[in-house]
Every structure is written in C-alpha cells, then in structure tokens.
Length: 228
Image 1 (tube, rainbow, N blue to C red):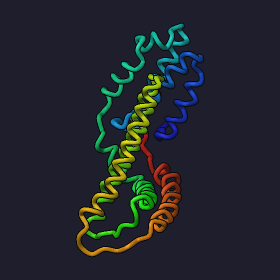
Image 2 (image 1 turned 90 degrees about the vertical axis):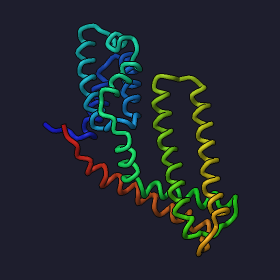
Image 3 (image 1 turned 180 degrees about the horizontal axis):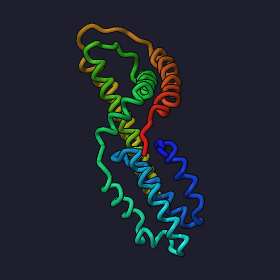
Image 4 (image 1 turned 180 degrees about the vertical axis):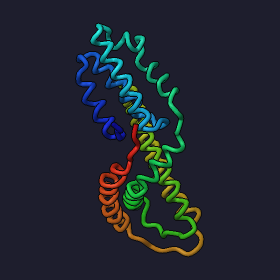
C-alpha cells in the first residue's frame, strides 16, 4: 500500500516506541540527525529511516543493542546513510523557499517595521527596495537553515558550546539583517520613493503570517503526495 511522507513519519515515530529506552534514545537522535539535513528529500529520508527501524527492531528481538547495530557510532552511520541518498540541496532549498515564501515575506515585513523604529523611518526607493527584499529573504533563510543545522548538531552533541555557538550565529544574522535593511536605503537612495510607516509593515506581517500558516497546513502538506 502506498504511503505518503507524512504517514511514513508518523509510522516511524510510533514504531520507535517499541524499542527499549536506551535504544529508542539512540535511534531518536539518529532520526533527528537525518531529518534535519536539508540535502536529502524528506520522503527518501523517511523511507530509509523506516527500513533501518525495521532492521533495528528485528536485531533487538535477537538480542542486539542499538550501539552494536550502529557499529558503536550512530552519527557516523547517519552521515554514511545521508551520503548514500541523492543530494538535492538546491532543489530542497528552492522548494522550501517557494512553499514558504509568504511566511518568509511576513517575517521580513515584521523585521522591516521593527528595525525601522531603531534606525528611523526611511523612504522606500523603488530601485533599491527589491535588493533589500532579496537580501533580507536570503538572511531569513539562513536563520531557517541554521535552525535545522543546530537541531542536527544537538542530536549527538549536548555540549553547552553548541548553545553558545547557536546564539552567536543568531546575533550575527540579526546584525547582518539590520545592516541589510539600513545600508541600501541610506547609501543607495536614488530614483522615485514612497514613505511607508513602520507600523504598516508590522500590520502587514500580522496579516500575511497567519495566511502563510493556513496555506502550509491546508494545501502544501496535503499536496505533498510523494509515495512509496
């Protein structure tokens, strides 16, 4: 019977509960590491996880522990598994941006209005604003990418240094976004312009973001019919 990506994910989550506590903790870290990698197609990763989970459950019934199953290095096993899958980094990135463009625009509008209170109201220049939008969306995507990367790093590494690195990168991206929203409008100010209040951008973000969540839940997830 064909199974969608979402169904496979639910099945993997439920089946992992049949493992003993230690093995389940190891496999959940393994599963998180693979799911958080943007290089692989989500459906392919869930298929592989489903196959590995079936093998792991069979091995456990025969008395083998998860650490033995993963050759005492679950992370290395996960890295090897990812490398065996087709690398679709660019395709996944463009697909993610396309599917979540409204959500990304909502976040951009919020930051544009919020940062505007600190740098002062700037006119919107018709020739400069597209550059600001594209650069802003790229930085916001870096936020998303770093979130996935952080989840992946923390799957097998619980060190406090990971948390420190996470916050350092986040603050660096916020600072970069600040300059992206400020510099082009200040130093590339040419051509016709229009004045838009900061609150207008924030209100727009409050309108766009719920719509983006609704579309993501009712259309994109329902239409992701990739089957086995």
